Image (cartoon, rainbow, N blue to C red; front, top):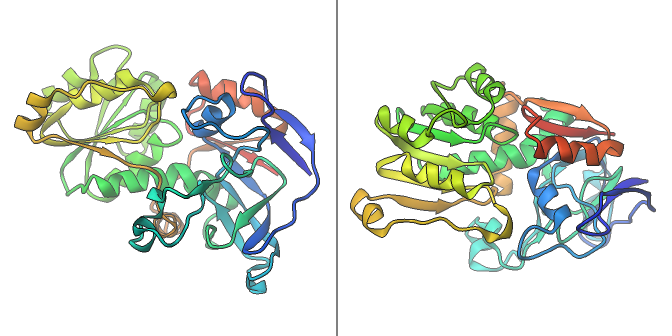
Length: 337
């Protein structure tokens, strides 16, 4: 099978011919039909974060396709079912987080395309208890971005506890942001879209954003404060400067939801006086659970969301990385097999 492999953190990915893997106990073999490109894959390939993947490895945590084979202990009726391979490959199932339905916080988790080989390949092995079945009403092409970009932004809206008519500022309108705009509207939020590219702001407007702010032309915090400030600011751009802008855009009682992960474990200043007196909350939101993903798929199957993505070939993976880093992608890129 063909797979895109990271051999070092300083060189381009290599397209290799590898043996088709065999599923072990509790695992399934998935024939990948579509695999989305997430910015996390780029961070992984470059070794940007404090905990780095072991080399060599295959990235990818938005893989979708039918189950071709199962390992010991896995029901054979899974064969033929179309499933998604999300970021959370497996968790311990026994800690306080797993048993309370918060498995994304499990400290023993393994992650697809990071600590285990992922879906930048024609076939991928996944843990049977970590996959999520894709309903018939969702294409594999759409399901791929929903498997991470969708469930991550859906969860961010959930943890923000948005109530109807609250102002939600989405910082970064791309693969995640274009979906965040839609989920914010689904819960009744008034949406402000913030980006430095006018084309992405135009996309946000097409998807129902109520207010647009071009951060390349004006201070977004000042612009948002002019209309009363944001009740919620969701940060999807991996820049510490954007996190700071988002914090300053909040009104009293506002919630800053941190989603993007800048390189080198960057930090921002959170002024204690203003935070306490203003009743500001700072919330970290990391992906979503299998239940969250099932809900994301159900909403899409019902026609409530639209995925904006472009098809690409796995052999063009390095060019695709460059396009994402250059901000030249309106939504998501999806490798089709």
